[in-house]
Length: 61
Image (tube, rainbow, N blue to C red; front, side, top):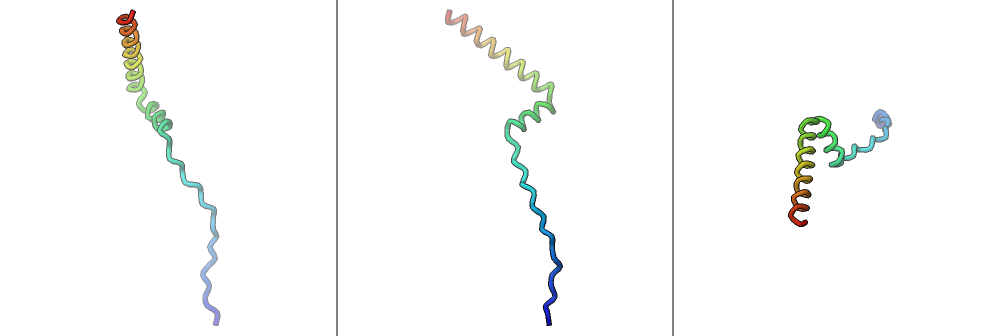
């Protein structure tokens, strides 16, 4: 007697696993979600850096 055969399975090629999102992509996504906060922090950082550079220029003249 022949042994019962298992039904044939059709193998589909596996999709490549999603690459882990890079830190840059995550940061950009966060900036889009929290637009106001990001802009506030950007302008505060810019003003602080400008103030630091002007202060150092004044002290070292």
